[in-house]
Each structure stands twice: as C-alpha cells, then as structure tokens.
Image (cartoon, rainbow, N blue to C red):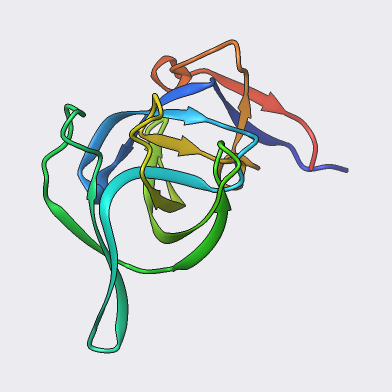
Amino acid sequence: MAKERVKLLIGRKEKVDFPKLRLYGIDAKVDTGAYTSAIHCDRIRAVRKGGERFVRFRLLDPSHPAYDGKEIRKPLLGRRKVKSSFGQTEFRYIIRTFVEIFGKSYEIELSLCDRSKMEHPILLGRKFIQDKFVVDVSKFDMSQKKKVVEIKGG
C-alpha cells in the first residue's frame, strides 16, 4: 500500500526567508522549468583560505530595499553549467543554505547570478520544489495564507 504524504500548495510567486543570509520576506519566483534555484547577487568571486574554497558575494543590488552592501562569504559547494532563461549557458558558483517557507526550514542549493533584469531576486527551481510542494500557477503567496493540499501516493 502506498504511503500517504502531504505536500504544501505554493503559487507562482512566494515570499521566503533566508535566515543565514539575513534576508526576510524576499519575493521568489517558482519555476518548474528551471532545475536549479538561484539568488541575485554581485561581485561574485571564488577564494581559497587555509585549503578551503569559499565564494564571496554581495546579495541583491542597491535598487532592492533589502540591499545592505555587505559582503558574504560561504563555503563553495562547486560550479555548475547552467542554461539561463535567455538560452545562454554559463558556469555559476553554487552554495548551500537554508530557506524558510510556511514556517519550516529546508536546505537549498543556490546558484549565484545576476538577476538584475529579472522581476524576482530569487528563483526556486524544481530540484528544490520536488517532493515538497505542489505548484498552482494561478496562485501566489500561498505561504502567507498557510494552505495545505494532500497528495496521496508514494
């Protein structure tokens, strides 16, 4: 018999928190067509310290209300080849952190990139979405409305 599981209903846009990055109430686009999740930042550069690899970057940009101009240093998970929504392929640095949505914390891998031409500074891709959420593209900010949908099956 298949085990029941509950998935949360999310919309095409959600507000999310990144407590370890000190970002709260940030708009995120939910994109089932994108494999990897992404976060907008600039001055992205890899560094080595004591044999460990890190990436340094500034989150968002001066036009965003949550921009603080502070440089962040995170362990570098790696570099991946990512195809942008414009069809361009580029290598992006990847970090691991935690995102909070519906009051629950989830580990997430984020590619660091310039999303200044995009409407939302965060993109939640299907690698993060799968097995946790059901997307209704006619809805938005469901995490603020605390809706839950049951999905039966294994």
